Image (cartoon, rainbow, N blue to C red; front, side):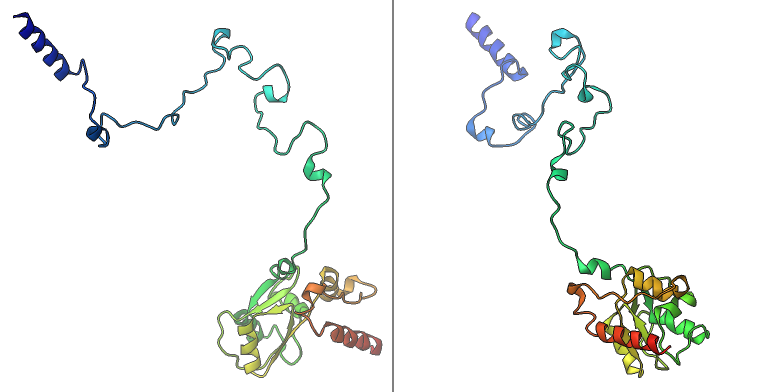
Amino acid sequence: DRGLAWRGFVTTAVTRGAFPLRESPEDQSQVHLGNLADNPGARKNRKRVGRGIGSGRGKTAGRGHKGYKSRSGNKGLLLFIGGQTPLHKAVPKRGFSNPHAFISRFDPINLKRLVYFINSGRLDTSKTITMKHLRDCGAVYPKVGVKLLAGGVTRLDKPIHIEVSDVSDHARRIVEEAGGSVHVAYYNRLGLRALLKPERFTTIPRRAAPPPKLLWKYPEHYKDVEKQMEARKGQ
């Protein structure tokens, strides 16, 4: 019978996938290997250039004729706007000076290292230890200043009197509990150079005042400068 033969052919074709049946709404909501795919537009074909003029991107390959952008090695210079003065150079600078950037450049020295140099006889505790003494004995070579830290020591056996650019609260407490003192003094680059290497100066310059934003850290600066000037006059 032709009807039965045709019905058998259609059944066989459908089971083999020649005529896939349309999924029901219930099947479309389920994820299986037959409906896995990226979102539309997620995968794009790669642009193939330089494959003949018939492709639309042959010859100059979409780069145009001559110029910097048509050459190999073009990286697209940042902020380049055609050879004229760029905007970041035409607009005046705006900003501020961060005082903490100056403080963060201090060279640290721990109390453990300081005690080692004292016990080895390279530092004299009978007088105030300055940054010049620390440099001369090789404990630290300051470029901007010295900050005293409390690393490796919980107590001191003898009192010490020291002058540095900055000190941590823990280190100050340890020194003062032993009967010593820590004096915080401000030196700019010229003042620090004059302190460390006075032989290079015919006249020792007057110590510069700290910036207004750092006056809270060096409240006794002007008194120290007056004492130094009076001491030099007495000499």
